[in-house]
Amino acid sequence: MFMLQVNFDYPNMTPAMATANNTAERAKPFLSVAGLQWKIWLNTEGGPKVGGLYCFDSRANAEAYLAGPIVARMKANPEIANLTTQIYAVTEQPSIVTHAPVAGLGMAHAAE
Image 1 (cartoon, rainbow, N blue to C red):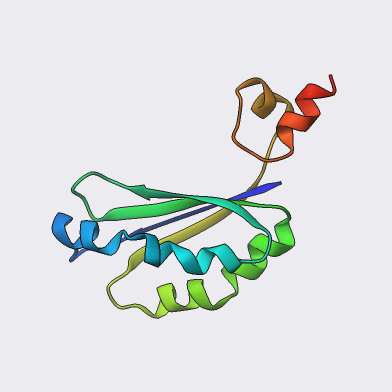
Image 2 (cartoon, rainbow, N blue to C red):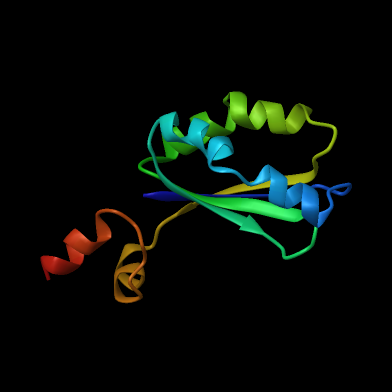
């Protein structure tokens, strides 16, 4: 399993704009991202910094997402600044101990 962390700024976004932007409808395109098991949406309270934590079933699918249309639109959006991304491999054993919400880890724990 691989985690993708994405962070960026919306320098001109007000808290009211952020609230209006965070809708269930906005999340629906992520349901069809290949290999994406889940996404957590991140937002600094009242601030312009946002991001997401994405759990992918493979590095290849995480890399494909980064090369795909959603990230391309983010890169082309003049309202977005300081976009950073990082892919991490999940370190399974300590993640099992700390009850990470990652599909498949619980099965490994049950087998012990």
